[in-house]
Length: 368
Image (cartoon, rainbow, N blue to C red; front, top):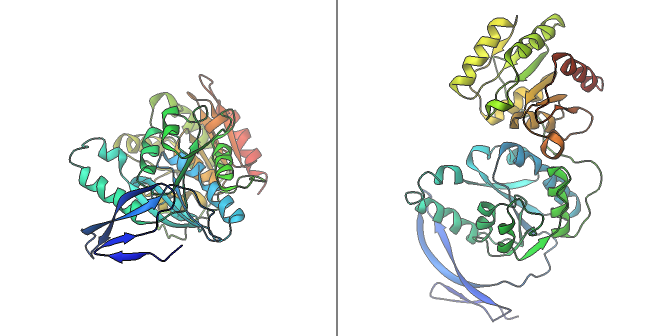
């Protein structure tokens, strides 16, 4: 094919397949758009280079983003010199960067944009133009929602995702160039891995590897002694474990010479942490922390016990003995998934006793 010829800001290419026009952008030092130019692109999927550029789309929530990390590990293992970028909600942007296989994180703000679509249209356009400007060999949407599928339409490449019967929102499958069937009756981690494998031509083998390590961050308030983290906060009231249970568990740790840390994310959760701290000897109500600090805290813990919340999945991904307490959801498909050190207890309308949690802690920490 002849070399492309540039003329007056346009890239003029010989016709190959079905061509469209899209816009690219240049940015100045203040991250403002300077100008656009148009160029044609082909929709035909070509054989990827030996070092392909791949874009992952998994925007939220915290647990779902963590469940996508093994996809990065698999791609790095099976696809030679792959360059992996990741589109994710701005609040969770720190998580993909914990994986050394992620080249660049592209934050979006769908949750914030929903509150004011019209006022946010300029910001949305800049993100879309940025995605168009970066040339990818393949875009992979492992979320399977309409919002994530729409993001893929900003990307000028082959778009892959779940088929109609496999996607969480079947309509999302209409926005992909290639779709794949992945059984729903398995954990989300394995569904993500299988979709990526089918899209890129490999079969994932072995246990899921999250590929992340505890950040090297100094937290001056961490105790020098061994400690456990009690993740009592969650997004829904029906997912909470009763406060007397947390107090009994905290006192058990105190009698074992292990201190307890009580993190929080909002004022209501802080008030609960303070109540628990006052009833548990030696307990610490942590300061407000970001995701990197949370990873540093969790990664150094003796054990982590949490309700159905994303930080429980983060602890499990870091290889820390982690117990998940479920009261309103079934952990079979989206619970903790990290081998013998991660144990799920309870389920929908199933109560879990303190004794059961203590037994699970002993089992999970027996591998130390």
